[in-house]
Length: 422
Image 1 (spheres, helix red, strand yellow):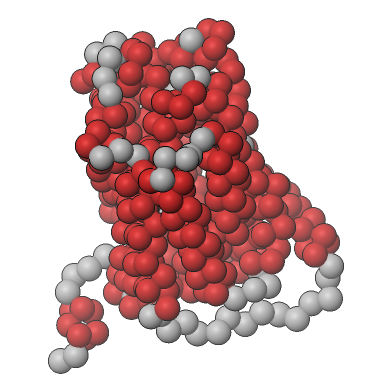
Image 2: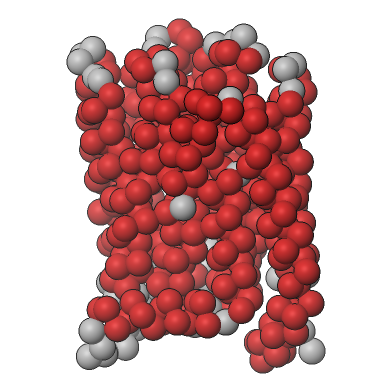
């Protein structure tokens, strides 16, 4: 019996029975640990170089603003390009960016403006990489019914890395400094690039069209925002990304000034959020169907909001860690749940555009939240800024919950047509 047959006999999650998805899962898992190490090391380095909440917000803004600008156009191109090749290219460029950051840090010449420039480069890479990876997942699974499981596994992979990466980063920063986090991140890209090159991908049929790129861009927005369930999910994600995710740039302040810790405390706080998110992803993996996911999407921002309010009020490490569990759990349920819903109902020829808009609702809006949070923290303090974000998340949850019955009425015919429900 060959290895492929033996693997299929093992009771793996459905998506992992697909050879290409296994390669993707393993490679991305290793690379994402490195990416989270770089994220933690970057905010720590910026705060140590500047001692400024505002500068944390500026770097957070510059790392993601290119994503907002480029994502809509990236989605149009991804629908027309070979997604496999796009991801290989973006991963190689991301590796070069991380190694450049490592070189500057190891030689001791790094300063804030260099971090900003490299953050802008990474944001531009992410504008193509994130929607391409989202749209590429259906090409990796052999059975369409395994798609929801693959998306949930993606979330578990992302948040497993979110658990491991910050914890390792805290130890590395505390012993040998942040520069080695950047170096390890650059090396980690080898795993995902090797996995991508080993895949055997069937050519995707791309329908010929004479439609101009701007017209295709407009078609994507009309399709996404013209259907109320998709529009509601996009707007809710944008609201939570703006108000809720901005806490990430303020965590170094909590770790040092409020909880009187160091890089290890920062790593523990980020890892605690990762534990909560990983638990949420595992819960989603266990779900058998996309049916009922709207209720989860509705309540998850409220869970996140409660966690943010508790985190802002806490002055004790163990309580802050518990609150970060709620933050991570609530966000991943909303983010991965919305992703699963969209990937289930979206038309394949519009998948790249819709997923680019979905990615934009997160990566594109978050930098503005970072910028506002950094500035607001200077005036009302970091705890009050985080508490305010939590209140906004709860309000968003309440509004979406009120709309849910009407949205469900529009989705039921689609599920019936797809055979998801009778």
